[in-house]
Structures are given as structure tokens and as C-alpha cells.
Length: 114
Image (cartoon, rainbow, N blue to C red; front, side, top):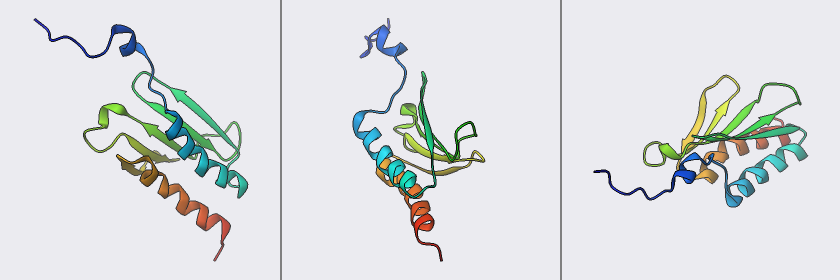
């Protein structure tokens, strides 16, 4: 006999999405980079097992960064990650704001050249 599930059958089929607070944090960094002239476009994908916010330098290119949310990794490495153009994980963790700091470092370099 199986234990009762906490989720209904329809909830199991719902795609993963960023909530309003998460989108606010992501769009805050994105807006600063657009103002600096570094980024120009974005795309959002809500898939069955993850949500992806893709960042583009120009439209119709491959994304230069992807912010991903994997709820099944919540108890392991953390459900948030930033992935670079080459597929490397630049930062992963449980706190979205801390994970997004890797992109804010790029903003500092973009605004103040040395």
C-alpha cells in the first residue's frame, strides 16, 4: 500500500516556474546589465523539472548565461545555478541572491574598465 501523496495528480504535471520574488531578484540584475549595454534580450522556459531564465547579448544568439531552478536539487547542492555559455556551472547554491552575485561581478567589470 502506498502512502498518500501531498500533491495532487495535476500538481505533479505543472511545470516548474520562478516565483515573483525570484523574478524580482533576477530582473534587478538583468536591468542593471541592460542599462550598462551588456545584455539585450532574455527568454524564460518553464519545463517539467526545471525553470530557465536565459540571457542573451543579442537576439537570435545562444544564451551567454542561464539562471536555472532545479527543485529536485533543493536538499543537495542547491536548486539555483548560473551556467555560462560553454555549459560550465559558474555558481550553485540554495540562496538565489548569493548565486546571482557571480553576474554582478560581471557588471562591475563592465561599468568600470581598468
